[in-house]
Length: 339
Image 1 (spheres, rainbow, N blue to C red):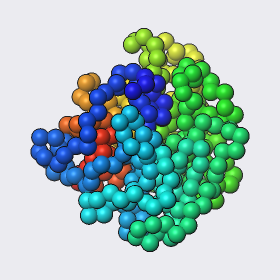
Image 2 (spheres, rainbow, N blue to C red):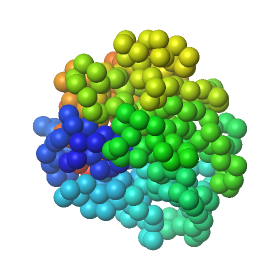
Image 3 (cartoon, one colour):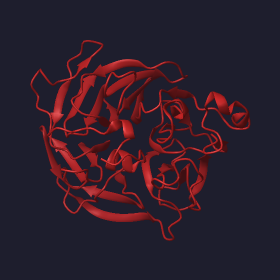
């Protein structure tokens, strides 16, 4: 796997510290099933999903986005899940970074486009509309997406890999969170100065999305900055690349907004969701050598607490539905556990 930890990360590779030999899809036997700190059983929902990046529910169905293929993995795409079986959506998009259900339609981030799929029949979508296609290109692609209470669609922008790990991306739009109307019109900046926003989520009552963000990859061990979770309030600027929130950069960071939550370097926050005042975050690598783990963090900020551990491969997608936390292993198994 390449060393650059861009959002093609999750999809193509994660940091130099994450060069892993990934197994085939994990089985459901007790020797490989993760455990939850609350004692609830961790259940296998389905298997053999290629690099699950994102989840959405609508029209009585569960949908999972599959990221671009990794070595020895199949191509990305979109699947529906029912009865423990994941079924490819006919003529569905490939290389899915984010999903959002809104107004009886599924919105899909495929990198340079956002697609609206409508009229789910139980086996297929009746309509397929590209609401935004990057024409210039203005940026390197979209990452995760989410609808806000204002009815606008929010999206992260992918980092151009790997040459802008320490410098300003040269695309006209870059290192930012943007929003647009549900029809793809009126694209505008929300937050700037963020290296690698990946997934986002609106906790109950929040006007703004909480966004997982990956710090730099390259450099000496003591100069690699922490990963972050920030709140994308309009007009905020978190400083990248001039400020990466290292102690040595205290002066450079004084004029920028401070991220809400810091995580250790290369903890690698991926999927993010919440129940009440508690965030649930999938950490691809984990903290302190713990390996891939789901952690909880107060929505007001604070230290992460391990919640689900013992995964057999890195974890990426995470979402909450009906009181369950769903999480996808890169190796292809999707689990759920009651909160």
